[in-house]
Image (tube, rainbow, N blue to C red; front, side, top):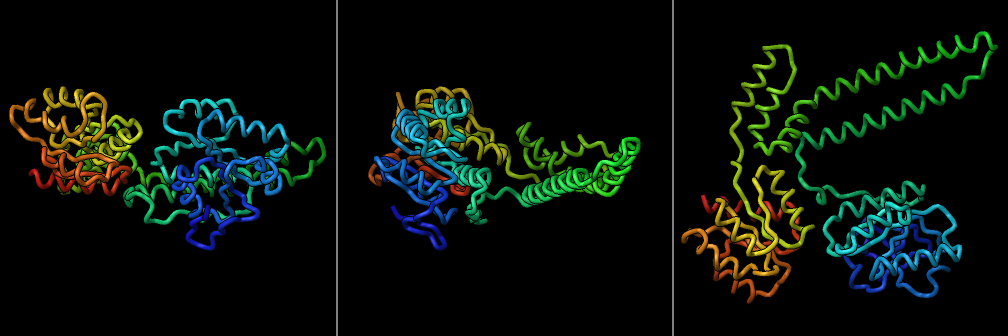
Amino acid sequence: MANRSKSKSKIACRDPEVIMIYENEEDVLGVASIIAEQVEEYRTIPVNSKIGLIINKCKPAVILLALSTIERNIELYNQVIENKCLDYPHHSVLLCNNRESAAAFRCCLKGLFDDYFVYQPLYEKLRLKMIVHNGLQSSQASTKYAGINDEELENIGENLSSLIDQSGEWKQSLLGSISSCKQVINAVEPAEAGSASAASTAILDEINKTHIEPLLADLETNIRLNLDSLIGQLLAQKNGLSTFESRVAMINEMSDTNPDKRASRLKKALAEPPARGKERILVVEDNVLYRDMLVKVLSNENFVVDVADDGLSALKKIKKNCYELILMDLFMPQLDGINTTKQIKAVTGGKSLPVIALTGNKNKDLIKKWAEQGLNGYLLKPSNKTEILKAVNKVLDQAR
C-alpha cells in the first residue's frame, strides 16, 4: 500500500519507525493516509508468516495492529513476542472497531498494549496522530513529527488558543528550570561533614531566589492575564450558559477587590450584544460515538441538546418538548428516519419542525424520498465541526 505523505513519503520504507500490520487493505486506508501525513518513515504490512522477521530487522518504534478482531491482534502480538522479535522498547497500539472498544480498553489497562484507537468508524483523526506522536517520543525515535496543519484544527477561539500556547511554554520553562536546579545540585561536591549542611542550604537559597521565585512570579502574572477568559469558558461549559451570560457570571465569580476595575468589566460585558439564544435541538442517532460527538459540538456552541437513539424514542420526546431543530439518522432500529419524519406532524398537532438528515448513504433517490417528507438539510457522515455548525445555523436562520 502506498503511503500518501504530503512531503517525501516512501512507498515502502525499508527502515520504518512506524508500521501497521493489517488483514484487509480497504479497512485501513483511512488510518494509513492519516499516519502517512505525519511520519515519513512509515510502512503498512499485510499479515503473513514473515512479520516477525520484518519486525526484528526494522525494529520499529511504534507498532499498530489492525487485524480483524482483538483476539487475532493479541494472538499475533504474543507470537511475535514469544519468538523474541520484540525484545526492545517499543510502543504498541491496538486498532479496533467500536464494538470491541471495551475489550481494547481492558487490554491497555492490563498493560498488554500501550494504547488503543477505534478506527471503525474513523472519527478522531487528531487523537490517532497524538497516539503516534506520543509513541515516537516515548520510544525516543529519530523520526521527526511532521505536526498538524492549522486547517486541520477546529476553531477553538483566539483566547483559548493563546492560553494553550502560553501555558505550554510556561510548563516547558518550569520543567527546564527544575532540571537546571537538579543539575546544579548534583554537580555540587560534598564538603566537609560540618559544612555540608550549610553549603547545601546556601545553594538551595540561591536556586530559590534566582530560579524558582522569579519563575513562579511570572507564571502567576501569566495566569492572571488569562484568568477572565478561562473562568468564563469553564462557567459556560459547566452551566450551559451563552457567551454573554458567561461573561456576566464570570465577573460575579471574580474576587477583584478593586471596585472601579470590577465596574469597568461589567460595563464592557453588558455593552456586548448577546450571542445566539439557547435553541433546543434533538439529536436522533443510534451510533453512540457519532451522537456524542454531535452533542459535544452543539453544546459547546451553547445549544440545549437532547438525544434519542431511535425514531420511537424521538417521537415521544418531540411530543413532550419544544424543539427548534431535529438532527436525525436515516437507518435506526424500530423506526427509521424517513418514517419518523412522516410522524412528526402527527405528534405536534400539525406543526412542522426543521429536520436535518444524518446519513452515510449517498443514494440520491433515498435522500430525495426523505426530502419529500420535509427535510431542511442533510449531513453526510462522518462530518466535522465546521460542516455541522454550518448546516445547523443555516436551517435555524431560515426558520427565524
